[in-house]
Image (tube, rainbow, N blue to C red; front, side):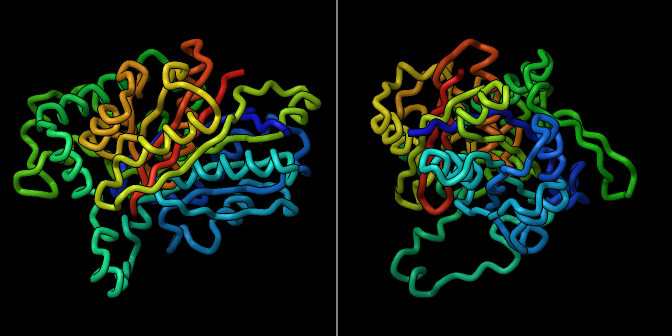
Length: 382
């Protein structure tokens, strides 16, 4: 069987949603800038099979098969296909796995796989969410809000507000330290655009990382979803905008072109859980992918777990028995941001950077998915 490899991985700095640096920037622009940063690696893009773009809310400015529009804006060959993929928060991790499966099945040699989300342009749940009355009556958990799912796990795992705030605090501290040490510089593409006021804006670092936050400041915030809840704006991932892409190709093709493959895609898995416990989804997904490829948890050198909420992340780490030192060593989505459909490719990009910086071999990227799913992928540094 052929092997699929990651030759390059890039992302935008993640911008604060609604009033941040990308608030006036179209999502096609976000995606195109990342692809343009990858394009110089290849002189000839005529062999590009498909452009796969994850997006959790593909409507409004993110509608009309945004993947194809990004291809036009990035100047990719007209002969390449393009598809916008929706597995909610797992969308752009799914695109990488789709590309890998196609390569392994000899249905293409060269892919761009990633994701884009402008939460400034298209709100969470979209513009006009419609509830199916039959499902609402017979299976109301299907429409459980994300914040309530976090509170459900907080109760189930007997978490405290202090634990959640400490987790969030450390996420910001780790991300700030990683930026200060220059660890993100290889993966992040400098972005120039215009702000809401029409003035030029240049973003070079993730906009939501707060090195100055403290446990005292976090403790002052009121619960966001339940009066007596643990989940606040401070220990949840912020509304953000961003894009990330991976250049995925057949390993033999990479060698023939003289390109250095950075990682081999071992494979992935998805798993379903109850929608009102959706945050625990990474646990069965990680177990499934480890079992599927004959690996043990102690063989994994680095893990990127998407931090939708502190309560959700703590529940996953506890239930999965994961070593906290291996999880999100450079901070996570609570600090960096969670631009929904772009987050899967974002955490894969950071996972690859971590493996290269720290000398690890195997890494897992995993995340929970609204509606009650988990997704996990294993990559092997080459």
